Image (cartoon, rainbow, N blue to C red; front, side, top):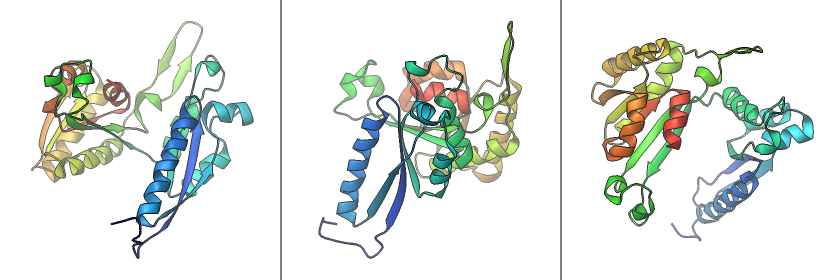
Length: 256
């Protein structure tokens, strides 16, 4: 298709932009420019409206996620987020990250997809050896709306606690998303947990194993403990296709 072709199915998409803090506004603006170019080529129109989130929202309204922002996001076709947080709000009673967690929960964004493809022309720039990272093509499915980040918190002068809770339904839905992605890729899922210690991880492993056996037996499934997985990702990243894991483990492993 050329820039002069306009498909019959051209649409207008309403996109809420949440520039946020730090580098967020710069990133969001660059992404909008890319989308505008895509629209020009394929005959689509993107209508952008900006709203507050994170530290910028705290400064303006006292809330990390104002109700106006939440309502606009839910009503939109898509949300484009820049970044939230920064040292300015360290120690503040309301933290910018609260807005990020709240919008994920409000929109039901339970499956966070984090892909990694290593470009052959950039493999030599990795801090790992070229022969280790060359050809890496994996995707992390991180459960995003449950677990310890969303559990009840307590704090006293002498102790603190964060409750990690998962239900069968919450595990089932993200597991299905990961298996369905594997069907379109190389047919392998690695489920990461800490089942040798944590009860939530034992439930996670049981549910993932059952969903695999009942619905996706054609997919190869393996289980890994999160501590050894952190090592394997560095030693042999080409071995992995789809990595499925819970919220905190997925946060750490995908950053790695």
